[in-house]
Image (cartoon, rainbow, N blue to C red; front, side):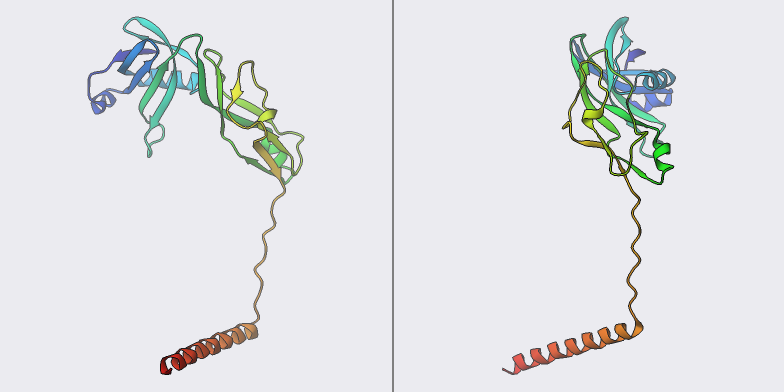
Length: 212
């Protein structure tokens, strides 16, 4: 990805089909930058938030990864700003790695419910060894089964920042909707009479208290 230093206002950068951002980290001062929108989209789709890549700035290459990406809250496909962090080869990265569930449809075809507790897993890993996602295969699971953090197939050096026993995916039976209890018309009238009577008794007691 090729970046240029930015001096213009944010709105002027966006008007030129460029994406404003900032780079910071080891051996570099926080620097406002801008890149071509298409270049940004291509790089982001390839590396996501958990993989490192080379960024060129002022003719020098820097090993970086996307630390934060801000999108338009209304137009979700429009990127407003991004942060990239420079790292060294010996650094460790902590990032949210997306979680992909495989064969969900086979479980749901049995009439069971697949509940995904985590969309991503916060994980620490060595720089340069990031992966695009974790995958969990739920084929063969039955009702009341569950997969936990400890069930993840982790590459060497990857350490999830969660309790190993935390549940990621659970399989359950569909809940039957309880029908509301029917109240007979006579019972409703009786309840209403009791309520009126109770209110009258309360008012009478209040009146006696005032006379005293």
